[in-house]
Length: 395
Image (cartoon, rainbow, N blue to C red; front, side):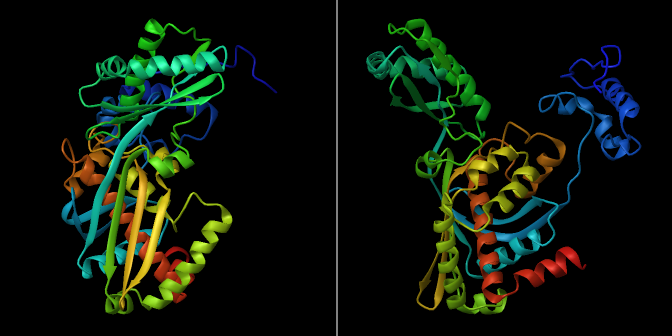
């Protein structure tokens, strides 16, 4: 039975949290549900300064606490990340941190992980609907001649974002513009949206070709979803990480042999192809979600970040392992990076604030490589189920 108008009343949305606004929401919840464990969410530390969360959420009622584990030291020899890192990982999945820690130990014992950013470009793809194919062609012709002015319009909205390319894609009377940006040390999702809106406003104001409609995002960019475009061209920072594991490290640290890992890797790669994976990898999403949550990234971006290629090849008696991940969307500034717990996570890494975005992306890729090494070794050795029984079910 639906509630009557008299019964159905709602609180006005609140964007600026106060202790009073939080109390009002909880009073409402107490009338409709079990709010006896309110302090687990609206705990004293959170409620001491509710306004510190204003930039990140609406209708604020408290915070959720997740277990945070640490792995490391993980040695990284990268173009941007240099040194030994302790990596915070927030998860509720037992055995995950232990697995990544084991991979990190094996990689560090073998000299560390080499990392490099290969490409950078967060994209937004506005869509324009025209009368017909001819007008779509005329529209693209105009856009191409006006790129410099469109770039100026987009960049007028940001100090850090740079529009590096505008790539048209025509489907009959609909045109998508692939607008690709560098975003400094921020992940840049909001930055590129605002900049692209300014670009679109300039098109609407000046383009001589009549538009029937336009949309700020045509669902072409791969924002928060896996796509072939993201796999091939990247959306964010494209990072590659690699390490050559010594044969004795594989045996002593991972409890298996190089050939056994290669044999299992061949089967796993076949499974990836047969099932239609975008890329071929074991479980990037585990490491990505744990680091994204611990450091204040947009966790929904795991949907697109968890694509890429894991490779394992014999190098003499040793084992070369690499990951190439085209869609790492992280920032050391902006978003949730200034929240108390997430700020502390970045401080553990030594990567909080300006100047550290690229290094953070390399740390993320290196950590994902550790997870790939450990899970392949565990399954190859027949230890995967036993580890989960010991660490997740029976401890």
